[in-house]
Picture (tube, rainbow, N blue to C red):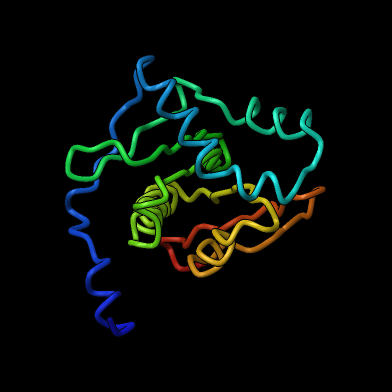
Length: 165
């Protein structure tokens, strides 16, 4: 299969992506998803079992901030965000491995960018240095503003609707 044919076969109908509020019954899915998606990067970042478990504990399911990403009514990911007075913080964005690389994460972030721009808010996030998602964030206009231990702290400033930023 050619690269172009592979890209076409990976394309999804983005109108079938939906974010729904999480419910307590999503706890198992979200915690399993986080371990499944992040385990390779966490294992490359920390060797100490306590550090690894501390990462997963700090990124566990949080009902108030979490939405479930669905594709065609199937749960395929998690988005955890925190709206602050001066910015939107993306705490977690995880997509099941078999659905990665199809534009879902990009689509979700683009929706957040539109919402933040309308409110004239920056968007901040933190990403492990070895996580390839950093390239996606950079492509969407995020810049590194701090390096903290094994993580990049990134920010995307709002596009002013008034044209003065």
